Structure formats: structure tokens, C-alpha cells
Image: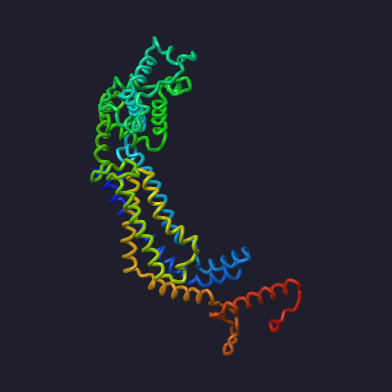
Length: 441
């Protein structure tokens, strides 16, 4: 995906082209899966009979299934594309979560510096919030070496937390989050952020006099930069407060330019693919909705084609299997709301391309014809397996010389088993010095 991104300079187009190329590259595996399914259908009646006959004897059932597998039955032959799809999905999640690493190839130490600047910038934004004057004054005193020890002491009179000025306001929580300053400088970041682990424990601990709302927001910032999405969060903070990053001496000028590139290239037709969709009316809602719609279409199409091509096994698995199949669109929707939009976009495109692929395969690689071909191959293999070649040394009646005669016979499985048993008994007779008479068989 990286060279596609370099060429097109857009994350969304890179995902789209990559997904199409991926589907084309895995087409041979899909065709093999379809052929294997057609071949496995030939065993369906025998599988059902074994399951019915030995439903109370799991050991015998497993033994009979192994015999079928020896004949060519492969119950897991269609799992390859599914396993590959899941592996690629996990890879795509990592790519979307870490665009600095995978798309811009920013060095690890510079990524760490970028994350550090982002964290301190967010800390500063909390204290510079216009609703937060008392907490701002407290943290200024705490950061001042001459007054630091007076902020968090064991004196009970000084342990009361600040009350938030807008605590009684029903809408203060959303307002409180939306009133961050528009500009944060390097000086702001160093004054209201840049905490050591010990200092952070002080300002958020039991003795902290900061308001509960501020402590909660500080902890939320620390927590979110501890997970896989820290590169995306840093990019979002860079977008909101570019001056804080531009003034940083930790980040090189080249990396700052790469960050600007990512800020621009993560947008696809106005959608920020690094953002996680929310359950509200916004443009980003389009991606989970498309993921759900395409998943429903593919599920219904797959079931429809299965009834046409494999009527014997269309209802295999009962209600449990049907529930699992028809719940997939809901699962897709939930996934799309829990990951960045870039992952949901890949998921949606995969479904859409899969729908087109299914229709084309049905037309040009018809399963009915595959089944006919598989049946012919199966009969040929069975005939080949039942062909027994015997070799004997005989005396020519005319010349009196010995010669080797080879004979190939097509025998039934019953006759093959009878001959094997006869050979075993003959070997036992020779071993124990007993007389063996083939007429006794």
C-alpha cells in the first residue's frame, strides 16, 4: 500500500486501489476455493449418512470421516481465503492506526517526540480552557518552584478540590470540551504541560485540589495516548494546534512537513479517515452505513447463490448457522463504529468488490459446470484407485521359456478388501507353518 500512497498522495485512494489489487491477486485462491466446494458437494450425501448413522458414536463418526478424507474430501478446503482476509484486515488496522509509521515512514524517535508534544499540548489546552480559571491558577503555583510544596499538602484545610464554575450547567460537559483555546504556543505547552510521571501522580492523586472534571480529562489524555491510536491522536492534535508543533525543537523540519502531508492526505472527499465514526449525524457516518449495506447485500447474495448451486447443503448447520451468517452485517456495523474510518472504508470496499466478484464468478465460472467436472474427475480417480495391477512369472507354452506377465484389473472395493484379507491370511499361514487353501475364502 505504501508505494500506492506515495504515487497518489492520498490515503483514501491508496486504500481503494490496494483493495482492488488485493482482490485480483487473491482471485486464484478464490477460484480454488470454489472448485474445492464443488468437489466437496459430491461427498455431501455420504457425510450426511455418516452423521446420521453414527450420531451417537463420535469415535466411529470421526473414523468414517477420515476414510472420506482419504478419498479426497476436504472439509477445510474453503478456509484459506477467510484466514487470509482476516490476516489482511489486522494488517490494515495497523496501517490505519499508524500512518506515520507505515505511510510517511517517520523514524520511531521522531514519532515519540510528536506524541510527547501532542500530550503536553492537550494538557495545556485543559488548563487554558476559559471555564478553568481556578485550576489554571493552581497549576501555575504548582509549577513555580517557590510555591510547589504549598499546593498538595496534608493539611486538611487545603485538600478541598476546586468546584467547577459551571457544575450546575446541564450542558457544561460538552461546552467544557469545546471551549479549548484556538492557539497553544511552545511556552503554553511547557508551562501547563510537560509533567514528569511523579508530577502527574501529584496533580491527579488523592491530595490534588484540581477540580474532578480537570483530573478526569487529564487522565483521559494520558490513557488515550497509551493505545494503538496514539499516532492518529497526535495527528489530530497537530491539526488543531499546529503552532505548538511548529515551535517544537524536538521535531525536525522534515517531520513537520510530513505531518502536514498526512493532515492533508488523510482526507478523502472531506472525510477524515483517521477519525472514528460516532453515532450521530455527520459525514463520517456514511462509512459505517455503507459497510452495513454492502454486508447485507453480500450476505443475501451468497445465500441466494448457495441455494442455486448447492441445494443439498443450503440449509446445513440449522438455525445456529443461519443466525451467525445473518448477524454478520450487524457485526460489520459495530466494527465500523469502533475503528478509524480508514478501516471501515477498506471493509466497505472489500464487500463491494466481493459482490461484483461473486456475480462475475457465477457467470463465467459457473459452479454447476465445476461440479460436473469435479464429478468426472472423482469417478476417474475412483476408477484409478480401484485398478489393481498384478505381476506373475509364467512359462510360455510354445517356447518353454519363462516370462513376466502384468495384468491390470478394475476391481470393486469389496473385491479389493477380499484380496487384501486373503493375502493377510496367506502370510499368517506361512508364518505359522499352516496349510493355506484359497478355496476356503
